[in-house]
Image 1: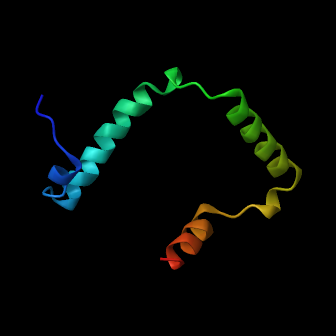
Image 2 (image 1 turned 30 degrees about the vertical axis):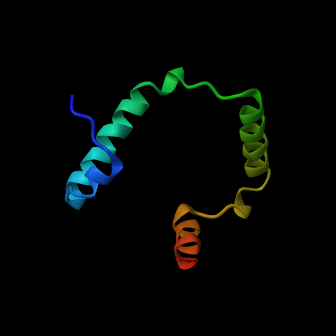
Length: 73
């Protein structure tokens, strides 16, 4: 298999780069069960989930979060 660099990927078309990212993600997600969270990460996730369950109206839909992030650029 030929090794490519991040710079090499810039020569690809946008659809080719998107496909590359999807292919890479597929290889990561196939191994996802082997990725272990630390106890601290689990604690943070559990605490955030509990806060959400206590008051789900305080959260923001992804579309709104994305718009806020994009407007900062």
